[in-house]
Length: 76
Image (cartoon, rainbow, N blue to C red; front, side):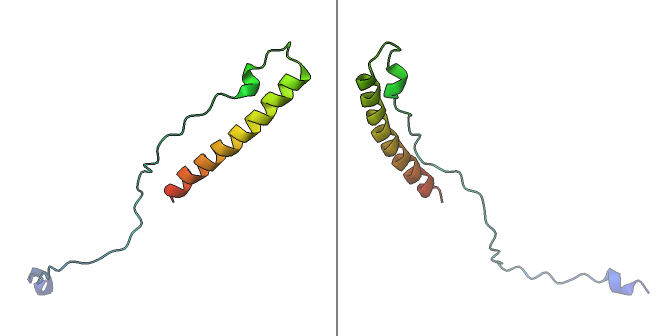
């Protein structure tokens, strides 16, 4: 009854392609955070100085956001 187990199986070696997603580390460069102008505005600054710094910061944030989006897109 055990004769079927005693026979050796014939091994056929051939390459088999298996498609499995593999995690790859992202190699996007680190984007330094700029110095935000509003953080440097003194408490004694006039409204004009405050709003001028706010407008500059808005432009900086827009550029920073674009660079971050490009880095994220490079990793996808």
